[in-house]
Length: 258
Ligand SMILES: [Zn+2]
Image 1: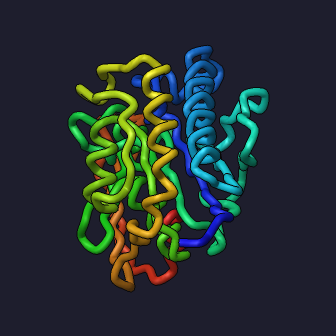
Image 2: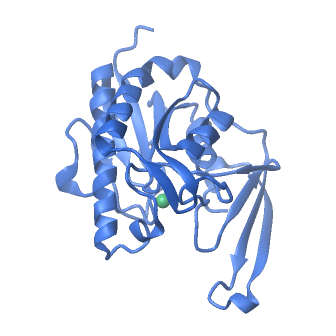
């Protein structure tokens, strides 16, 4: 391929970042543990940008995705990219057909994955679960669908071992996966020194542009039969019940609001 102006979009989450393994690091924004966790994420982002730049990426846009999507710490922004944060906005704000590939950084496995650190789908408080065309899907598939709809493949995913396994299962073997920790249970993990995971992210990113032509945009048969399950009334456990909603959706952009 003669293309030289590669454009890469990076969708980020916090649960799969190096050094993050408990909800105390991801839920309470006033906690020092949360601020430290976002610092870990910023370090992973920096390693990724170094690698993508070295591989020849001309434009990199990094989107803040965890929770409300306003986590980034400006003074830790690595040069060589722009950063989208704040709300309200689309989860893939700024992503259009001119991009060549998408990286999912700091992602986590879908709700119910036994060895998935901080596993959940969209909300860990209401324990949401999603199915598209009868296949249970997590946030990897959801973001991949939004990109796939524009014809853009996911080329690299970082997170724990369960996240990388899920990425390969949904997106195929050519997607580069980088393990940041090994999940033992929902809030237990075998961690690796940050220096080592960042070297692995840097090395993965250096190879990511080379797999663009081998990664397929993630698409589903239309209309997509969507099902969502969640637990209602979590404040009063005695009254809680599983709620179900189903719909047939043609507009992929409506998937996130369903
Ligand atoms: Zn998150």
